[in-house]
Amino acid sequence: MSTKETVTTFSLPELPYAHEALEPHIDGRTMEIHHTKHHNAYVTKLNEAIEEENIEATSIEEICKNISRYTKKVRNNGGGHFNHSFFWKIISPDGGGEPKGELVNAINKSFGSFNDFKKQFENETINRFGSGWAWLVVSNNNLKTGSTPNQDNPLMDVSELRGTPILGIDVWEHAYYLKYQNRRPEYVSAFWNIVNWNEVEKRYLEAVK
Image (cartoon, rainbow, N blue to C red; front, side, top):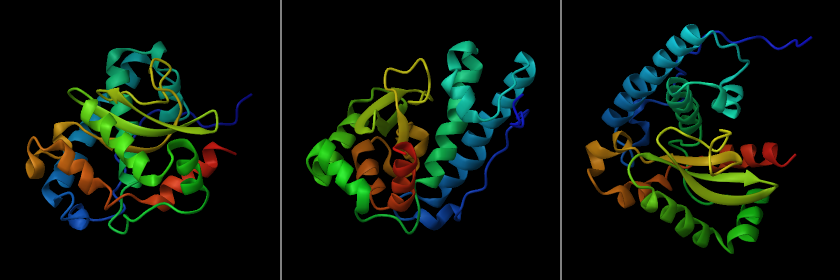
């Protein structure tokens, strides 16, 4: 018999920093709308779907990993909740710089250099048509980049990109349009100034245990 507690509803997580803390790279108004409006809407609609479909799960990760069992409403809003909860943690006002330790060794092994990795990751954001996300994932203890449409993510059993995400960027227009308008590459370039590499390395080490 499982001792895991079944989750019946999800809630909007608090940000670990103020809305304006990521300025000038991401403006405070964008962060406020992104967190309190967009993310909150995903949580609300996910909870509606859980009740409507009588879903029992221990975590949002479990739902994502078995997403093919569920409706489009669960896929869109469950993905939106996971992706945004993930995103808030891998960015920080104290971020930026370059990764260190085992993570940078893994990046160099997989991509040749940190700069080569950045170029490949940025290409994923540019080549993602319309709304979606770009990712760095651990797959079979190796690193690879890729992207997913809409609110899909690499945990989902329907995703073409599979693996454990350790870094991701939201390239929906709502993530950057107030400041950058249609200049997605400029937003992605600014993103490197707020990446929380300590959190990314922590997730990498957990994924390769």
